[in-house]
Length: 291
Image (cartoon, rainbow, N blue to C red):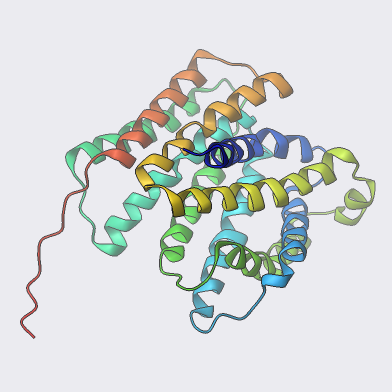
């Protein structure tokens, strides 16, 4: 890889891996839905010049915005508020297995025995988190993270159908369309938002800035650049190291415990996801077109 490619890969790994511990820090000053609203507002502002109406497929953009802005990010950060950042980093790795399962259900793709085995290992790793001692993790919030992963998987299938829309233009529209969804949800479910925003300091606003710049511009931008210039099989291993960065940062900066149970859960989840990602897919049965 070229030096620029290496820096792009490191940027994706660091920004996406640090999302969970940094979000945990920001949640000490801002409610989760309020923080997401601010993140989307800043993202829409930064990418405003790209808000050109696509010639077709605007309804698809709305569906993606609902999946990500209405479900994925609100559930993810609400889940992070109730569990350690390390647990969130592990649980969110189920995004890829869920995407494979949805592809089987919706697109009719077929699973090999090896990929089924990988799915079981990945979900088994997340299931281990249920063995956390009481008070260290909330099953309700872990469930939020898992449902958030399902929403991401839905969005990923929808994004595959988007044509003639650049990655930053797509993120601009997602942010703009998500703002009213998250803002209304925050207004209904949260309280003291205005006071929290006015009182927020470096932790709160720094987190919002990181999520907009790091998560969107560097994270999505770097990944899109790499996928455009390299085979998917060479790029996707980066995502397997994300929980390693997240867990390490949580231990160093948040003083979270690195238990043997968490290590086992992380190892099983990463191995399972790796098997699902790299195991050969079963080729669909050939269809003859007689027309």
